[in-house]
Length: 96
Image (cartoon, rainbow, N blue to C red; front, side, top):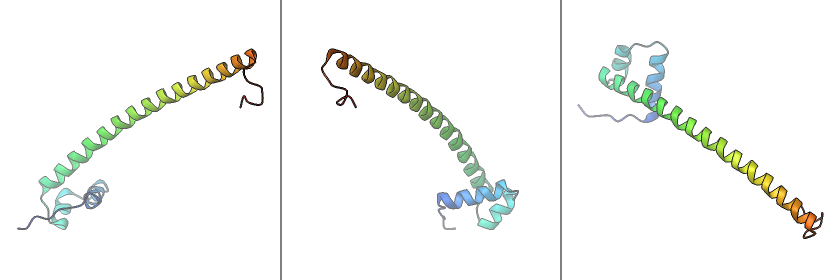
């Protein structure tokens, strides 16, 4: 029997059918694949979901940290401009 390669989109559609109540046996017969293949796809999809959640948490934390750094830098710039203004190095028009 010739091996058929399924795209990620096809795999997602098959797994979506399973989540809507179709049995593994029916999906295997309908798409002419083994039950073991479906279970392997389900396991991989679950692992990918957990990895994606962890990645998003890391990205959110990094985003929070960078926003904090940006706010601190903006405050420092503002304070330095005020000091330069008081020393007479810049005029109020040059400030912004």
